[in-house]
Image (cartoon, rainbow, N blue to C red):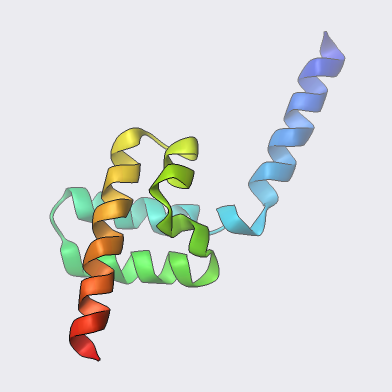
Length: 89
C-alpha cells in the first residue's frame, strides 16, 4: 500500500512540475478578478497565463483541474479577450 501512495505522490509531483501548470497562480488570480467583476485586471492575467500555456484557454482542460465555475470564467474571459483583440485591430 505504501508503494501506491509513493507512486501517487511521484505522479502528482511530475504533473505539478509541468510547464502548463506554471501559470496556475496567475490564472487563479484572473479567475478571482473575473468573479469580482474586475474585467481589466482579469484579462491582463488571463493573457499572461495563456501566452505561456495556451491550453488555459480551453474551459474543458481547466475544469479537469479546477471547479466548473473556473472553466466558465475562463470561457467568458476568452470570449472577452478575443472581442478586445478584434476591436483593437
